[in-house]
Image (cartoon, rainbow, N blue to C red; front, top):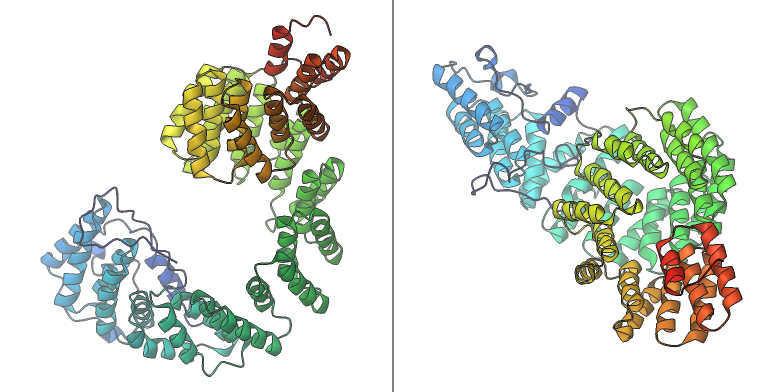
Length: 614
């Protein structure tokens, strides 16, 4: 794992240096089973936001969150002078201003001058907040030097030694810590130890250190799995495979070992599936293995096999809601909408009873979307109303509510709802703004939509979905040069995005320009998504533009059969019309009008060809 470490003593702006804690979940205490509850609480505090400046009355404990876990005699008999009070206050105020460097230097200087381990601890906290392990090591060493009985100081020193690549110095400390782990917690400690060691810069040296530390634990499957993880990091797949096989010999139902072994075995999905199926035959209750196997099936588009697997999980444990949600998602994908609704309702009922083990709001949201897709807006609103403001799904529910309002011709009310959401997270801000632009586009207010997409693209650059929708709004406003620029940018961002190639090729074909390039672009899209009806429609359309009406009609009929759609129907009708099959053409257009009577492409086609009543 690579951390964006910032050197405290390099030049930086206060805005550039984020005061987020360094993500050292394994690092701040790898020995998960060693620390007491108080010590673990203290470790968590070290990664928390820096507290406000202390009042003079509490300055005797400079780090307000600090509690000495070593020998009380380690606290030096140093008078609390006005100078110390001033330095502590000045350091805390500097932190509040986003200036960690002078605060760190002040506490480090105080630690050296007073030999007070709490000063070293506070300096270490600041360095961790600033994501600088080298400076954290300097402070941790001082803390440990002045509080040699402090378990937390020893642990942090070992962690920082590993992160800085000082494995030889870290080894005896880590060995002592591992030796002190109670038997009941040793398995967890071994896993946490490997997670810490994996963060060091020397992968091979880290593997050797781990093997040395675990030499007396080689009859534990957890130790062999930990070593296998480190072997993977050193690209020693064969060694990892041997370690995992040994782990399974010791513990035949070890799910971690089975999952890793399947992943290592081959890049061939079929071999991984066979490996996991073999494990499940012997261990049918291995839930995580079943979940991984189902994921492999889904990746291979074998939805029926995945469905069977989740169904067997449901039968094994009727109180487990997870398979119901997975089954519903698969049902939606396969257009088994009634069954999807049934599974979602069952999931919601279970989740409501279990109070926190599962989130019923997930089901409410999907049920609302299913109802909306079936034009049952009142039922959709019923499900959305069940999602309260405290739910993680609340924002998505409000977005869906806005879309329903717009669909019911209440666009201004929908946009007002979106404008009042004011989410904090950038991802959520993007969702709300993107939805707002989409509502304008769907309302055929294309100039406003393009302006909105341009604003979003500036605020959130290089988001593929935004770039694509921005390009489509440009196409509607006949700004083809900008549209092409955006789509070519999207192809660079996502070379495997079939929609980017299709949109660019279709636009060229529709304008009867650059047909050779258009054909190549759409062929590329078809290679990436051979069963996509809209890409098939584009391929038929470019063939028509090139004069190949026979192939065009075959492709367009196939596309319409796959996905009855007004635009595809408009194209099919035009090709039939030009081939002299007017009655069939009108039949195709009538069917298209039933799907979407106001479709732009359909209306433009009928007007251009001067078709009378259908």
